[in-house]
Length: 324
Image (cartoon, one colour):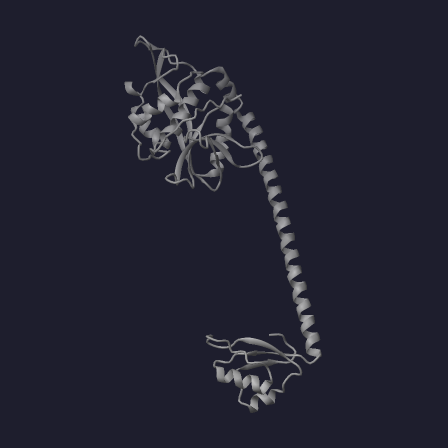
């Protein structure tokens, strides 16, 4: 069973999130692959010294910079008992696809390994932020990552929306030195790691692919159900609107049959508005401090169109059986 041995690291006010994510992934690799316990908070200090990143760095660039320096004496990583120190190189590969990153994280999760990842956040000063992926959620395509903000948000969710880039991560010990300064045999991967690796054999990969296919089918089924509900709601809303419109038209037809005429006064002056009100026997509608009048009146009975024509009223729209 993979162990989440992540520590609560805190980068403070510095832009060293890449170093912290890198340190978490490398120390986890030593623990799960070689059964060697090292301190991430101590190692991150080494990373910042060998690969300065106080004002930011790139997740995918850090292992390149580290591998150049990893064999130096100052880059050695001591265990928590301070009895041995190790020089460690990192094998990695960049991933820019969320789907591929999730697939690789499933594999890493089986091995108990972490994967550094760049995401976007809404936090001030952290629009792009580096975290260490630790596992995939079940029943969803989201992933789970260890953060470097201390007690605040120790873990963050990684989604299709905030994902930017990730790297696969494999720790490889290249040298071991004892407390007496003498070289020691490079340790072999632990049995728990090799057993997990065996589960990723072709047969194990087939089983994992079948599980992934089932998950995708379940997610697609959920999407179809949600889409069907949305379509049903849209159809219901459309019917309500259509029913309201039909009711309005029915009311309009009833009023028209009873001799009610609706017309729109679009007078552009107080004088014209007064003329309209006189000819059609309706109240003056021209409001104070308004450029022109746009009011609707109901007149019973409807005035004859000829009355408007003979009085030279051209800015009135009259309709006898249509609601304006």
